[in-house]
Length: 169
Length: 169
DNA sequence: GACAAACTGTTTCCTTTTAAACAATTTAAC
DNA sequence: GTTAAATTGTTTAAAAGGAAACAGTTTGTC
Image (cartoon, rainbow over all chains, first blue to last red; front, side, top):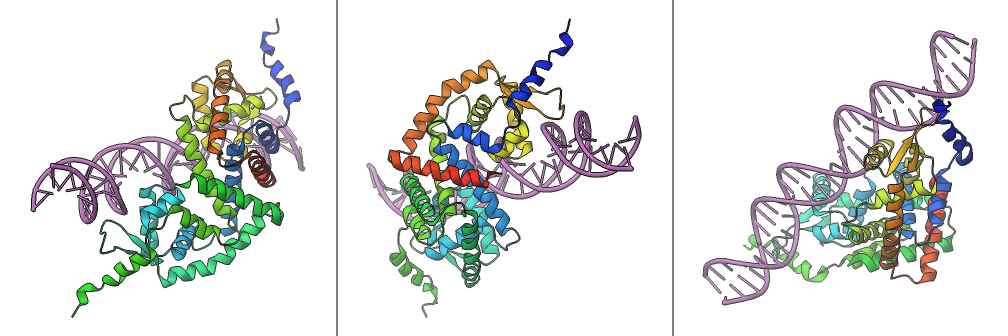
């Protein structure tokens, strides 16, 4: 009896299904209908791995830069609104803002008319940091999305913004 | 002296910069050039919050379903390749696969010709789970992306897939 | 064949993120 | 006015995720 050779069948199968590449796996799932949710997750993770590589060694992380830029463009922004906008939970935002405040990149201002809330403003150092790193982020973005031509990039941006905006409130 | 009223200036500012909505903050950042990286992150987070809501109470999470579907479409898939494809680290994949194996939704098969590696296959229960939940995921997807018409949806999927695929290897 | 190097996963430990409970302030109802 | 409910953040405890070190297996070199 050849009972010892049970696994041989699998060894045979191996030759059939052989080396599966990441691209083939992606394609197999994307071949199904309605898989933008999957695609957007994979794309986002891939893009942020790249962005992290581009910017490692910087004084600020991607998330910190985003927070500073939001505040710079919207002075007086409340902390909770910022958290909700960026889809991070309030406790996480508390820690992030604490760290940035300690580094004197932003200020907490408690307004007279609502002492529960916290309004955020950049310090001069914070503004300088945004100014310094904005070009680096733009360059990284161009590099990472080099597989798309200008039209495709704009189209993608438009569609993403429509999706994100719609789901926002 | 009115030194006590220092904060009054801020109270005045409040009226000017007033209530900032999430949409306005998104718009302020998207108004800049080269912000697809930001948009894709916000969109992805928003979409997965929705998807989570649609599917909470299910027997399997979004990630678990994705793993099972990948294995179902690519039987014999190696664990490390799957991890790299889905952009999770190997230790995380070990935990996920352990849990799914304990629930008897998949099998680990160690091939004779390479006893280092682990090939993954669905059990009948695992296959049944995929079959059961696939329609629910499709329905959730349709609902979540209802802001896009068919053309826009297909275009988005195409662009995301191009970006993800390009960055994959 | 024996030893070094590469491959493939796993374990351990630490950081980050989240959920749940808490505290302070304001608004609303009576 | 007082008390109940809503708003806005913070703290604490638990879960998830990742980096570094580890272990077993295979391949290549002498």
